[in-house]
Amino acid sequence: MLQTPPAIPGMREEEIDTPALVIDLDAFEYNLDHMAALLAPTGVKLRAHAKTHKSPVVAKLQMARGAVGQCVQKVAEAEVLAWGGIPDILVSNQVVGAAKLARLCALTSIAKTAVCVDDALQVEWIEQAAANSGRRMTVLVEIDVGAARCGVPPGPAAVELAKRIAVSKHLIFGGLQAYQGSAQHKRTVAERQTLIGSAVDAARRTVEQLRQQGLDCPIVGGAGTGTFQIESTSGIYTEMQCGSYVFMDADYARNLDAEGNPISTFRHALFVLATVMSAPHTGLAVLDAGHKAVPIDSGMPVVWQKPDIRYVSASDEHGKLIVGSETTMPKLGEKLRLVPGHCDPTVDRYDWYVGVRGGRVESLWPVAARGAMA
Image (cartoon, rainbow, N blue to C red; front, side, top):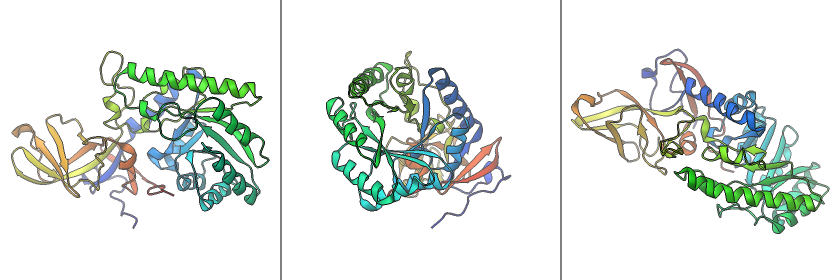
């Protein structure tokens, strides 16, 4: 059931019904502009990952600042973006199943659409779906550059798969998907550089072997919020697939820079607004935001700008706070902002973004691809 909007434009932030998904619009717009500025000197394009925001509104704001398109993980996400007017979409994932592939091929009538493979059987299935639809589908080969998740081994195996795509009259070889996901949350610069160095070497080697076989590689895509500054200067990657930078979560903020300090490249822009529903005694308060309001897979949320208050545990509808002193004890009914540990699954819990600027609600945007798992 679609949730009732928790706010209306013009109301004060403290009047927003909770739990609510709040965007600080000043910080959000800073993040959009800052990413564009960081990538501009490199010549590398941003293909922002919409699995984070699930919103054609956000996608259009990214593309207005130079993003070449969007990534998604699911066909349903691609549909929502295409129906919302996004013209260039990569499913940076494998898609299996005749029904899903038929839906994906149908999208090519309204948007440039591509998908990834790591097996010849997937190529065969996509080829059949494209033939049935009377359209050509762009296909990228995903190579495993160290994450040990999806992907064919780099080098000869990837080249053979690319050749299989290239000879099909129903398919177009689009390049390589080379995402090193396990590097994104390594805390030190040295750890991230080591893992991404191996990924860059694997991608470079594969591109060269493709060229030796007469195959151009238009896209080498990958990178994320934690490592894009390495891939973007590698000379081999052409598209960055960063997603979380638009919002920044508590876990990404734990990554360290070269001096060992928390990275402050982007600002926290996404919050779960919650209300103190119980304050039974000094030192303890309870929020109306538990497991169903904010995920804890990447650690507990952080209470924004209140270091003396810790969110220590969650149950379904309760978030337990430990308060360090009587002077910082929140009042019953007080609203607090929480910085989620992991922004992607947090967004997927809500139907609405509430955009706030200067303490007032400025906008309401639907989380249009919420629950788009198919």
